[in-house]
View 1 (cartoon, rainbow, N blue to C red):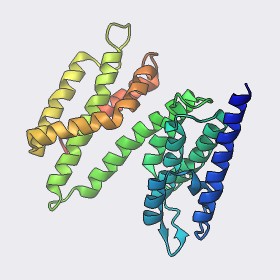
View 2 (cartoon, rainbow, N blue to C red):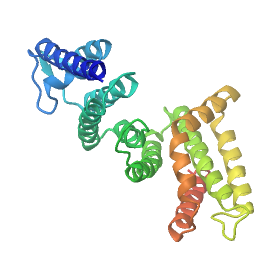
View 3 (spheres, rainbow, N blue to C red):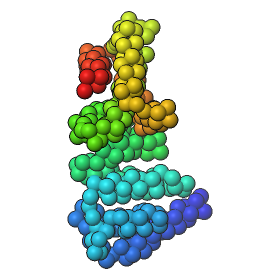
View 4 (cartoon, helix red, strand yellow):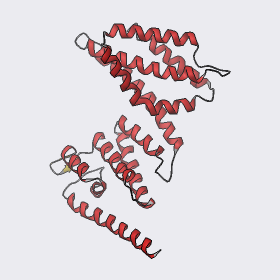
Amino acid sequence: MKLACGYIIKKNIQFSILILYNFFYFSNLSAEKIYISDLSLLNNNDKRIFKSQCTKDNKVIPSSECLNFIGIKIYLVGYLKKEISKKELELFKKKSIQYLNLAIDSGSRKALKNLAWVYSSSKSNSIDLQKSSEMFKELKKENLTYKINNLSKTNNTKKRKKYNLAKLELAILLIENLTVYYKSGQNKDFNYITEKQMKDAKNILKKVILQSKASEDQIKSLRSKVRNKNEIVLSFLREDLKLNSKKNKKDADEYLKRLKSLITN
């Protein structure tokens, strides 16, 4: 028992020393939103990256990218640490959430995804799956809105090729979502979209592929990119669709309309 207590005390002392040492290392920097002492929580490689990318003239740049970087990196240090007390992990999590929220307020979409992951982390001792689910839903809407807005910015002759690939990526993303809606209604008393609507959606995707003039490798790469980026988001959507609701049906109809609009734009 004494040995165990001694080990815990030793680890806490080492942790405190580490914070103090790194506080002096970064003491010549100043920031408005980022506390200099929090930089001590980063590992050595991330400290170098942060100092290189997020400081100028001995001042920290509190951009959305830098806020997101320090936020997720602080949490990863605690998450990946093999031996860590609950108190330490909560410190890492609290600091991480603080910076990720600031990054979101500054317009970082990556921070929204990172914060949702932090809330859903199984290593946290205060899991908030409801918050995580809500954030992933919000992220799903943000992704679609972001891509739709990007299409309007790139729709010109000089950027036609890039525009077509962006349109194809959006079409694949919509199909991935519609597939989840379709499968969630199979073998049940309700459905979000019919079999005919799903076939029509797939035919629209084929037309978008032809219009894009994308190569097989490009199509394969886009499919992989969309699935990897939205795998977690879609898993939360599957859970949400288990209970029938008018809102879910309305969302499915909206995605169908957006997909159909791609072959006329």
